[in-house]
Length: 323
Image (cartoon, rainbow, N blue to C red; front, side, top):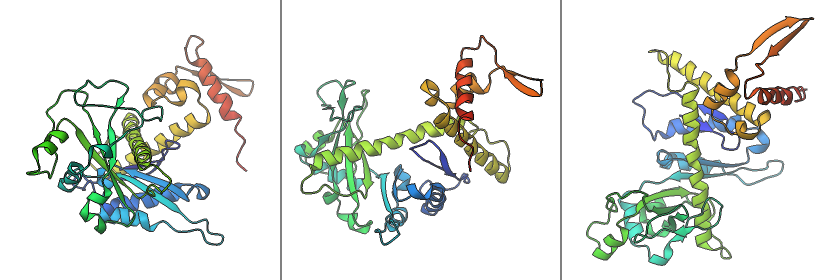
């Protein structure tokens, strides 16, 4: 497991676990998040959003996150911690979705941040069509056992490929029209403790914004893919202790690459994956020569990215030395 700072791409904390460890082990999640929050500089530690997939939807973890919140008092600026985690599309969620009226659904936000064009089952999906989101909090009777202030939202999207839709969980012997209404969509859900829509806010707009915020969590998959490039998928030993050290070293490598891109890269290299940086920068065939009491790093003139490497060194050398 790993906790990634979405603002910077840094790996705040990591933990290599045994193959028998459960995906939704709340104690492991709490221990890892405690270490991750401690890594964040104090001025930026007071307003946090924690996102996770469905493995984070446990009573113990969400109650722990809720317990971190405290109001400002005196010199204490307080702490505001919100979560947005995947929610199981189980029988309770399925029954709640089936009870939603047609006008309860709101178009999801498109890539430009504006409401998109809702997809329909009787028309082909295109690049400009989006799914829909709805608040199902009041339709979940068991939600009182979860932390206070929790909301649950359902999302329905039309698969891009023709697939046999799975039946909506928990609908059982509901009326045939509800089954037909649910057929053809793929359903997902997420839970959050962010404030509900106020009397002056449009509930649909709030739901769409919270959904758009949760979908950003998908970037973590890119971080894990990049982590595999730096060695996370190449554990070298049968010793768990050795592999733990390897995994921590890989996390340090991820941090070094993130800092390099934040401080010294621009253009495409500021967003490039490690494999691209390895080819263009790290594996450049350079030579080191000595003369006149100086050392010179010589890059081949024909290398297409030589001027990018020179710019990286120029920016790094311009950074003031720490006091």
